[in-house]
Length: 158
Image (cartoon, rainbow, N blue to C red; front, side):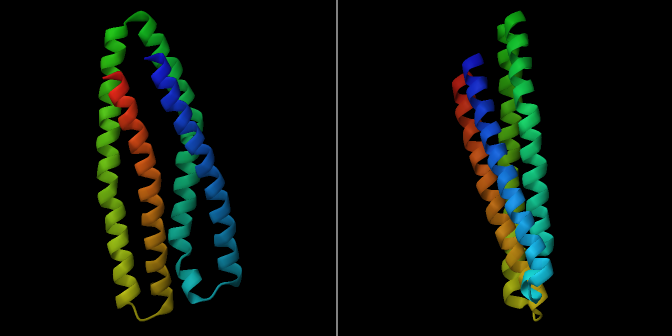
């Protein structure tokens, strides 16, 4: 079980590094859009800010938290393997339910974005809609990679 938790945590840490990198790139893009962009680009600033916040916040969280989980699980497993495995299965099952629920949230952002793009009159609102579409796509990608890795980990330890 220790090998599986280490593999899972290392995957999340690697994804966290990618998220931090993407967050930095989107931050630079948002700054450039704010300084030099037109109405549509300025409309995208709020969703771009959310993308930066999510990537930097959760990416940084995974960088700091996942190695600690490996240590905690290893220590609990050394004392009581059965209880440690049951606790870890319950934790990952909860995470998988959360990832699945997030798909509905990303879908809502997508629907709002599409609605704004086609219904809004002002370019700022259309930009906001495009930003929500980009936000939902980024969220789907991030969460589905996390969910897939958690599912594989869950099958390995269950």
